[in-house]
Image 1 (cartoon, rainbow over the protein chains, first blue to last red):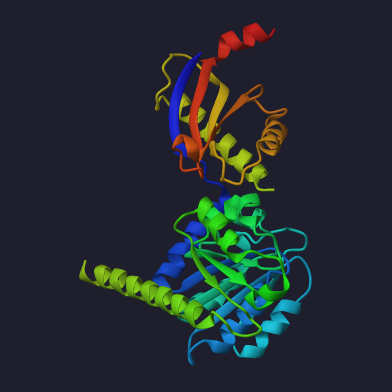
Image 2: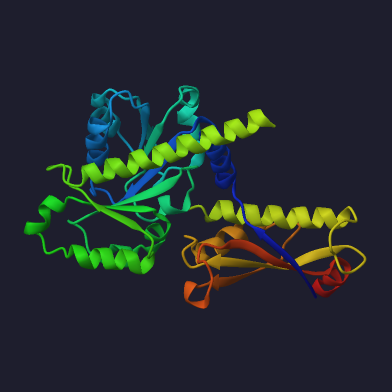
Length: 231
Length: 106
């Protein structure tokens, strides 16, 4: 028998669509973030507080994924930004095609910020690239400190961990330092911001992170546009 | 859940390679029609791929097609051994002479 080296990445259909999405969002300079966390970690509340506190005139939009119901979209629509619900009808994650199908005309509106709330699940969403710039993992102090060890995939891929519901810390046995250590054991470079949607703690820092990333994305789109016009 | 898609992409790659050989391109080391006996994958421990599920999906998609029988070998890549951990790669194919394989099967 003869062994022939192939050495090629296995790209599935999702990766191809995600690459197309990434290219489109690069062109428009849109910062796209994929929020992943367990059900009840506070993803929707985080987005609500975020939308509430975005600088005026920010061109932001939200895609929110759930297996059933439009509840999250209804909650998020109160803040005056365009929101679309993706109901997966059973699938436990969003995939790139769903995102592409729901973006449609949004790609032509000069969006600065696209916030994608994934289906509540720490496992499957990790494997589906949505063409985002970064994954943000949301972990709440009502969960276990060992979540990063139990679900290493998402903590490895996320650029930022939002340790949420820190207002509950006096009432729960959660050891925040241990959770941070666990996350860094999986990924030393992970950034961590502690947030509370009830008290607003940590939101200044989170919104700064967001603004800096959005600025970087816009600048890189401008640079590549200039490069094109020069050539 | 996405193992079905991964299995399909792996099979696509197998078909593409066979097609290239049939066209006289590629690196088939032997003259004459070849068939793929084995596919070697490299999968990182954090790639989010379930090995059992991938095997199941692969077998289901191979069944009754002209590439059957075909073996799947998975090498798991661990970060402690210096891998990135998110690999999902088609590493190699093992080819055999199609004629000889047919005769051996009879």
